[in-house]
Amino acid sequence: MNNTLRILSAPLLLAAIGTANAASFSYDYLEAGFGEVDLKGPAANGDIIYLGGAKTLDGQIGLLGSLGIADYGAGIDGIVLRGGGLFHKSLQPDMDLFGTLELVYSDWDAPGNSDDLGVAAAVGLRYAVQDNFQLEGKVTLVEVDPFADGLGLLLSARYFLSPQLSAAAGVGVDAEYDGLFINLRYEMK
Image (cartoon, rainbow, N blue to C red; front, top):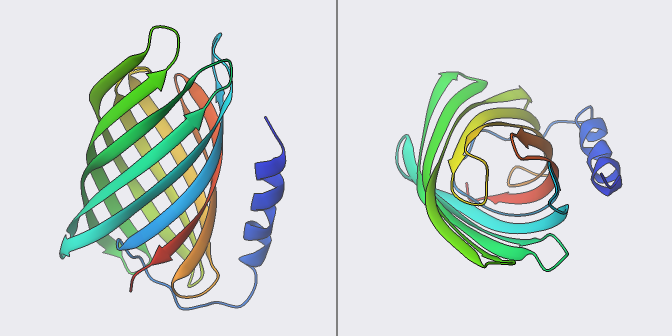
């Protein structure tokens, strides 16, 4: 896997030691990110760019959505559109439980062109280590071609550059891929 993401994410962990900026859990945001994916099996490795956002509607529920554009080389590229609902509940002042349920549409330009409509679900925890540094982990289930049906795990660390602007780095694994990602998020507080 390319060392670019490892090099870019190291400053996030070091910066967490610095002075704190006031930041709390927010589910109203816009974000953009980049990921590198190593597919298991004969498929090529690829890069993904994504844009997404979430908006709280009433207390503990909200909406979220995203657009991902993937390039796996060897004539394989595609888009993934996701949209659905989210919930969150404070377990203690520095920890939230959250969950999502989304419809997922994938459309791939590959030999035999394929598109599919499926679902994705996730449940996870967000933990504030300090005011400007949060850890997140979630278990995922995605059932849409060409992704493997089954459980996955996403882990990330988020550093707040200001109360509204944050950067994150993370890793994801499931039955079909291993991946690294970075993103920038603007929270609308």
